[in-house]
Length: 440
Picture 1: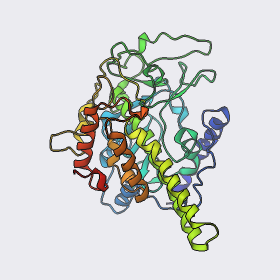
Picture 2: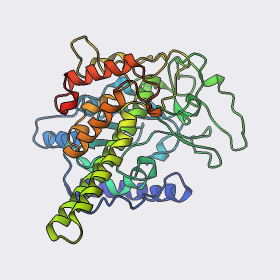
Picture 3: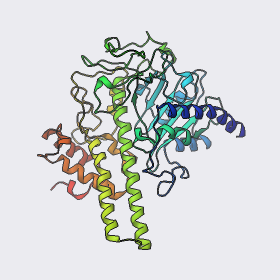
Picture 4: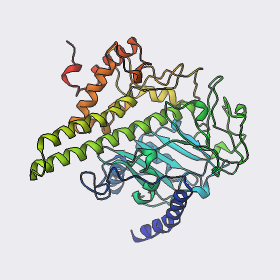
């Protein structure tokens, strides 16, 4: 459809200019050259995606799936349904840190929805931004115009998105990031303020600057629901605490949910960082294995030394993955966290359970995020399709970390009961475990 292509061009030219501007002013950091996306074995730009969005587009093209267009929400509601992305996952960003900055403000926040491998961004008046985790390519990025078409198109756009989404913030792989930034009353980021990358090892008082947050969290405080001024050194966080109604700031009826759920935001932070670590490890090991294969082919250097280098590379790549799988250095909660959107209940219903009904998706929300602190992302296609050599090393390191007693300070927060429960759940719900995981 030539008309559609030209429309995309008109939309993306100003967007690309804004991306470059954001990079110049320091909101994005350029990707480092440690991982070459445009060369074997990754070939990011030339490899056809095989993710949930690419599969949906095939169904749309073949008439097997349809999306209803609504006057206000466009394709949003139908898209979430087709991708099985829960509305309860909605998080609302009012900082102007997206490609569609002209539509975003505290009175018109951008909504983020997600499931285990898809992220959807929407703001009233704008187009739909989508990204999906691809087992071979890490994250792929797409744009869907809000135009009522017989067969809607979701078009991949990686060059523009990778300006920010393949940087040091994403561990230099195509990935995602949850940022906490000081945003003013108009949504613009205060350049002189301090920003943070959020994860489960971030103190709550550093999280969610530029976001709306709904839910209860007791005496803990965060940066959500607050607006900064350039000259402000100290901010009273009380007005933004334990908020359950956002209507004082904007018309909540213009979004699919009235919530920006605190539990969904906490899960989102962990998930995006877990996927980034898995992707980086996979890329590094694939490159090491390719180098080894080339050496064996042309015998340009010692095969034994190259094999030793590969073993070392695999071991080094696995360590950050294992750390994140087991929530190393997680910041303890000091009060109960309560979400209001229904996300807590929906999230816990998905995923495998062992014979005793336990799941890695069981949330704790009392002293930590999960009841059994081993990431549910271990069930993802991105993890399952890692190179076999890397996955075996991750399992070996995971097994050693779960053996009590251990002197590894990274996992000091795990009790003997935690370790035993994790071993039993993983052993019963993962089918590709190496021999050391099997019961004696």
